[in-house]
Each structure stands twice: as structure tokens, then as C-alpha cells.
Image 1 (tube, rainbow, N blue to C red):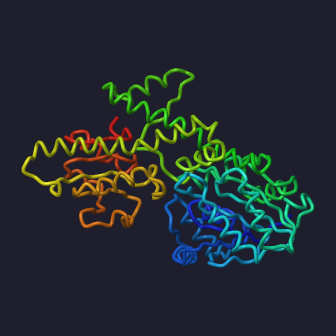
Image 2 (image 1 turned 180 degrees about the horizontal axis):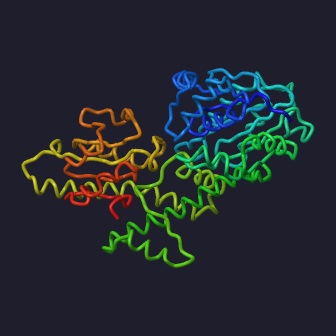
Image 3 (image 1 turned 120 degrees about the horizontal axis):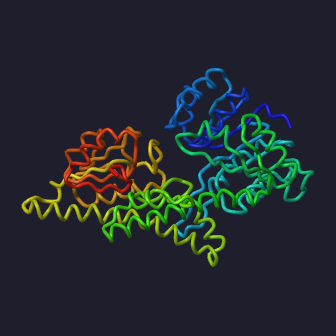
Length: 420
């Protein structure tokens, strides 16, 4: 099939770079988002997220007329759905954003269109998306009923890029293409080969969905091992960073680095989709999630211990006189993404302790609503050195400039090994 116009639904951390890369290949791209501010920003040739070099690409493709953003979907040859898939309080997947995307694009679907779900999803979500579309457009046929002869092609192609390297990895990484039929897979491969230099590996939709969940669960389990080691080593008075470096000298050992927890919309969320689908069998995956979810509480306890020590050294001082600083709010280094961030959760908990809180997060301009309090201030990196207690939560490259001062500070909780 020939794709001259593509619609990308959701212009966030994945949707916008994807739209920009397609547009840079002279494909007309219509980006759709519910956020008016994001739409206006993009149409000015600017970006509303932090991703290296993305601003240059967006400025170019908007100026050349290959990318525009809108609130309302328009007709296109293909649609990529890249919307959030959070979980509910019981850790079951919440597919309401996918359902909303289906309702939005259904009126403009036409025979011969291709619809791809890129959102990381539980097994069966692509089939559910196809059914929602079919319910909205009974005049069109879909793969679940007509197979290869369907009017609309449907596939799942999970994103698998690293924030901070998205533009490069979109092009170079292999892609898993899971069509609901062989014809669906072929159509999706033809679309992605517009820019993908990696291999497009074909499977079915369910396996493609599970592949992404498996990749992130593998990472989560291995991070949980490192986080558990860090807590054990603290109890046994062992430097965990030295221990891991020594263990990794074994030719078949590669232990990851511990941190303040695990965040982001992928690794902190996706394993629960597997647990929810097979709770009796996903025992290691569940336990890894529980270990990583517990790490922020462990870090918080370490800060509380430092606060107790400060009060003993300053018996006449009240809690409001204690000044605590946190380095980092994002879920990983050198990005602005706060989704599911353990650092943010720790900062919020510290703010509730009644002390003064200094926040150094060089990738944001304003504090999130949960930290918009009188005793909480967003500050520059060096200002945190005046705090009584400093908690390093993210290894942003900007923080390396003060490692010498941090090393000589009397009360530092280093959750990420910045001073190792």
C-alpha cells in the first residue's frame, strides 16, 4: 500500500518523535492530541517535551509543511495510536485512552486504511482496539471478522526506544510487527520501512504485545536484583557499588545499577499487565515489582534517619528549620519525564514532613502541582549545597559538577551512586 498521509494519535514522548521522523521523510503527517497547548506549541515549530535534537526536526518539518498538529483527527491513509496505557488501582490495564482514540478516528476511517497500535498494551489490546473500531464503523470490515479480505488493516508495533536517544533508536532499532493477519503485517512493514533501518520482524499481534511486556519485565527483574542487593549491602555495611563492580568482573555476570526505585511509563507499569493476565504464574515478575516499588520507602527512611540525627544535633530547632534538598525528580537521567517517578514520590513524601525542601531538577521550569507548596522551592544545582541534608535521587549529568562538594557534605543520601 502507498502511504502519502499519516495520522499519529498522541503527541507525547513517543508520538511526537515518531510523527517528526515520518514527516522528515516527506510523508504528510497529521498529529492529533487532546492538549491544546501541545498542539499550538508544535504548530509554532516548537516542542513541549525534552528530547535531544527533536526541536530541530520539528521546526524543519513544520516549516516545510509536512507536520501539523490538530485536536480533531482528519482522513489519512494510516493511523498510529500512541496514547498512554496506565494501570488502575488494582494494577489492571486501563485502556480508556485507546478506546477514546478509536472513537476519535472511527469517523474518518476509509476502506484500505491501516491502524497501528504502538502503545504498550496487555495481550489482547490490539484485538480490543479492532473491535472498538468495528463497533463504531459497522459499514467497514475488520480482520477479526473478514481476515485477509478486511477493509481495514490492524497491527501492533510496540515502541522500544530509550528516552534521550529516541530519534536515533527509532531509525536504527529492529521493530516487532504484529499484524492481525499476514496482510496487516505486510502493510505495517511497508509503513515503517519508510525510515526504519533495523529489521522489521513479523509475528502476530498477541506475541508482539507480549514481546514488549517481556522486554520491560526482564529489565524490571534485573533492576530489582540490584535494588535488593543495595538494601542487603546497607544492612551488612558493604559498599554496593564496589560489590557490583567486583561481581561484574565475572565474564558471565552483568548486574545492573541500583537506584531510588523504578519509574517511567514502561518498566514500572508493563510487568503488572503480565501479572494481571496470569496472576498464578507470574510470581517472579510480581516480586520484582514489589521490590522496586518498596525502594522509595527505603530511601525515604534513610532521609528520616538523617533528619533524626539533625534534630539531635540541633535540639532547639523545629522541623521547619530543617532544610532538605533533593537532586532530581525525573524517572531517569537527563530527561524531563516525571511519570511514575520514584524520585517525585520521595520528594512529595519529604514535603509532607514539614521541613524546607529544595528541589534541583534542571530539566523542568516549574514544579508539579503536588510540590506547589510554600516550603518547597525549585532551585539551581549549587543552591542545594546549603541544605542540611541532601538526597541524590537521579544521576542527571548536571549533578556531576558538584560531586566534590557533595562528597564533603556531612549528610548525603546517595540512592543512585553519584558519589561512588
